[in-house]
Image: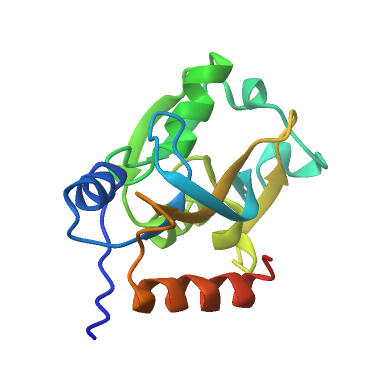
Length: 171
């Protein structure tokens, strides 16, 4: 048995699953992908602004409050959740920078180059110089496991999925 962990953008992950080069995916659920799905957690999407920014007084903010701000966008080849949120809400950010690396985005925000929206799991640790603000209305992504067919998983993939479910507290 060989366990291989691969990382890539959403399109690559979906292709790998469809063509059978991976047994299952641990990723965020995408509405246009029709795989079997087991949800592990909902991860809030949050605004991040530099310390000292005029919006830091707020307990929560709407996307509209970011209108006109220089915006640092997570690369949509690697993340579909935030671009979909922005599109669905009708918000058109003033994108000045983009990166596929969340830590790079956080550092750019800290340096005052702009504001951003990022997944909450990246924001659990302390990031000095950055203020995290919940969005209203609440926005989130669903994280879990996708597979072509739960019944057709190999015994090893099934054990891995069971272990992941136990770790995440999913029955």
